[in-house]
Image 1 (cartoon, one colour):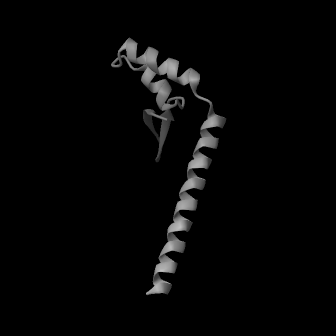
Image 2 (tube, rainbow, N blue to C red; image 1 turned 30 degrees about the vertical axis):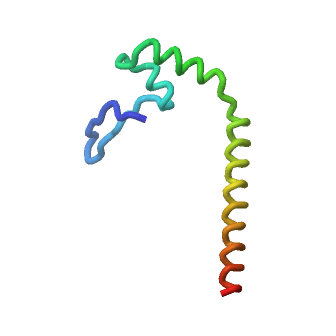
Length: 82
């Protein structure tokens, strides 16, 4: 949310904000970004599947946890041998 204006009303300051937008929407609205880049972003946005992305994140987290637990077990075994 971007601050549009501030006005003093008595002892208080009243702030007005623009409607909330996502970074994707702000890039598309920006005149500084080339049309080719915007077209590429639109194409990529159409291929995104939030549910599939969430599953992918969960799988990666599970892999990291398994690696962390495996390393902890290896370290404990090395300490027991020493």
